[in-house]
Length: 146
Image (cartoon, rainbow, N blue to C red):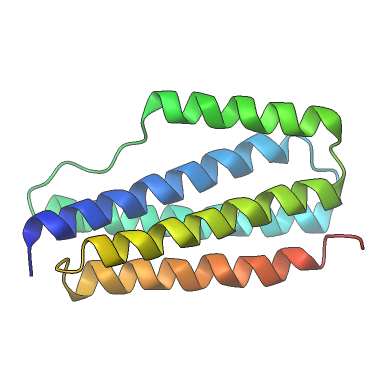
């Protein structure tokens, strides 16, 4: 196991989850369907758990906790605003969230491959998060109208 690979993968988990939470917070302002809002709140809560686990492990290893880059967060806010200006329908927001989940899962898969010496804990945490994001894709389908 490489401590550097583990730290990098854990930082990627932190970045991925904090961006997911940020996106959810942005779209919740435009969600009027209570069931959909509940689902998004649950998703954000689980993402915070992933971030906390990664942060805790980084701290145990004497590393600084993962932090979101302010510029990335601002860009995300702008992108979400622009997309919801067009339409804030539940179907549209669900589609946006699916794209984010898909992107997040793909980025974590790449990170696992890139940091293959990360060790069991970080790799399993990343895989669990991938499973969670892929599961969200199915859950969000029910909020999309054909």
